[in-house]
Amino acid sequence: MTHNTTPAAGTDIAPEQACPIAPVVDIVFSRWTTPILWALHEYGRHRFVELERRITTITPKVLTERLRRLERDGLVVRTYHPEVPPRVEYEISELGRSLAPLFAALADWSVNLGKVERVRREYDSKEQRPGSRRN
Amino acid sequence: MTHNTTPAAGTDIAPEQACPIAPVVDIVFSRWTTPILWALHEYGRHRFVELERRITTITPKVLTERLRRLERDGLVVRTYHPEVPPRVEYEISELGRSLAPLFAALADWSVNLGKVERVRREYDSKEQRPGSRRN
DNA sequence: GATAGTAGGTACCTACAGGAAAGTAATGGA
DNA sequence: TCCATTACTTTCCTGTAGGTACCTACTATC
Image 1: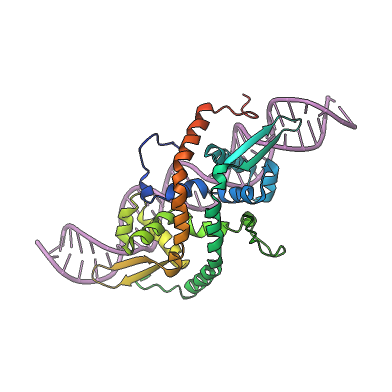
Image 2: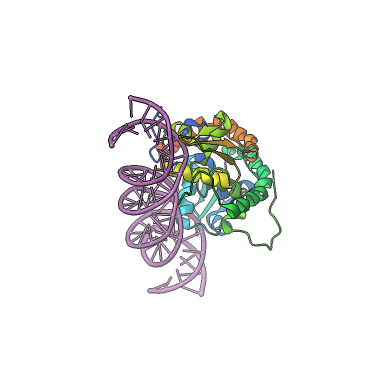
């Protein structure tokens, strides 16, 4: 339950946020927001259907919700063109662009994914655990 | 800024992982893992109850699950001491320590949280949206 | 023999995130 | 009149994450 739907008016601090980076993670890396932000950051402006097609597994309902939230948080800018078939464009905002070093750090760390895979296989292969599993 | 680390087009890529940083986010920033990793990273070794008390809102069941996953992924090291009241210690691994620049980038970006708050309030105050909400 | 303290395990249950599918408003074209 | 198109919205429904509560084994201490 990392998401507080109530805006927590004022000074209250959610208890699981004893760590100062949790709110940032909430805003930037909550479900589905990563591929959306990445697409807008990496490939520029997108229409709704373009995002839908790029992130193939997302449903329109969820995509709408996430885009609203990102717009509300000021990370994404929505532009509505009142044309014959309506056209809407989403692009990353200035604030969103400031996430670039963060994304870069993520991409840098991804070199370790192979290591994680190896550790996982090793862990799964032994699966003996001292100090539990007594039955 | 165009970090194109995308591998060869032809090998199957999990669909929501059109963006290469999604797997990293999955491992490092999935639910509850952030405060756990942060605590171990920032304050060193912890016993189970110490973690429980630090992250006040987590339940023991979930804490166990997350710690298992982090251990399996090689980010956390578990040490069991078979003493009279059993004692277990969790600490961050070498691989986990390599997340430091990532955490630093997160912490850096947190200066923008106030900006996000302001944008949110502005968005909520108007809440008029051109191109939708016609009823 | 009751209790406390540790590190969980297990069974059960509920809330909510999110999927599927259909509807909608606007308008030009056939 | 019907269709197509876009960008959603709405309704309904299900899976599962995660919460509550209780249980375990072991020993020291009272």
